[in-house]
Image 1 (tube, rainbow, N blue to C red):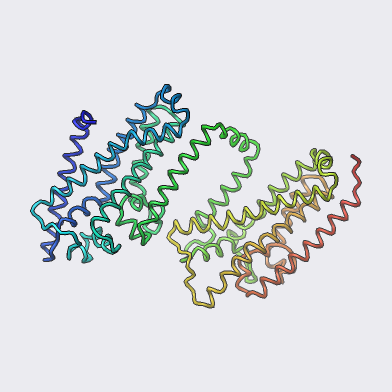
Image 2: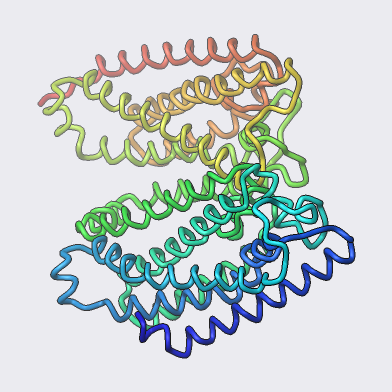
Length: 499
């Protein structure tokens, strides 16, 4: 470690620290004198430690260089054999790089205090730092936390340390997958460019996508109004990296790849749904403030007033798309495995019951995924979860959720049972595809104006008609489900299968 400190890269960083610290002191002193407000050493220290330009353009490249150099050096097969797993190797590299992290933080903080020599040394915030201005935005944000400067210094040091460790773990995860020096160099460049783009390009409203919110305490407090969220997000990110590498090291990723090869339609379908939620093309230009409004507009579907082509198209992709996947699965069952399944379950009714149980769980999983993705991406876009309307409007939220989940489940079951009946009677793909086309057309509001047919009734556009309409839709859907179940039982009894 002592010899490492004497190398050219560390001498260069010490020179950079000193020059940047003195430049910060000069600027802060000039602004404070211009405003004729007293200042102290904390104004220099925190302006230096919270500079996004210094952290992203100087500190981050230096850290990526140290991290990449260490990972390449410690990638030895004898070491891997001794440690027995990749996650343990990643932990080993964290332990190895922590002394460099401590030295880097120590030099940065000490230099920040050294350049304050001759200034008032106080234990509290200065008047200049507590006054909002263009130069002291960092200080003004930090003092709003209500914490003392010493505690803020500790929290800022912990945050930047956790951020740099997360960067190191991400680079280590990539190197485990592709252990080549060229890949390591490309990863470092990619992370640096990604961090700069996050800082310069990503809008400030996308709180969870701004790299400064995870490395600079003043930015994170301004965005989250708390010092806790960045620590939670970074800790969860570390957990994900270790979990992914652990799964890979246990050779379970092969099962995942096999699953994707056999069932690639499912991840493609999920990706399309998530992409549609992340980039809400269904309501461009519409001002949205809450995630619940976003949920309403994304799955608006149709209403009595009419429909929009893009909105209904997204509705069909999400809900009719799931029905199409079910039809493919059902065709596979009816065209070969049905006799094996009947031997296993002893009767058509028992087999159908198990099929519907799995289908219900799949539909609930889909609805939870859609709602969860809408909330997560809404929060990333700066939306909030608090209903901004009055008490009368906020009372609608339970009906929103009831309609989305309960009527959504009932509507999907109606689609699936209708398709099951068609596939059972006419066991040809053309009839099933035709039935899907009928489901799409019958959902249009000018064909189903009074909502007495079980098509597109889970559209969020019907919520605005009041609670009585929502519960009437439930009754309609349940009635059709009972009729469809009765018809299926009749078809089972009519069809005799000899085992």
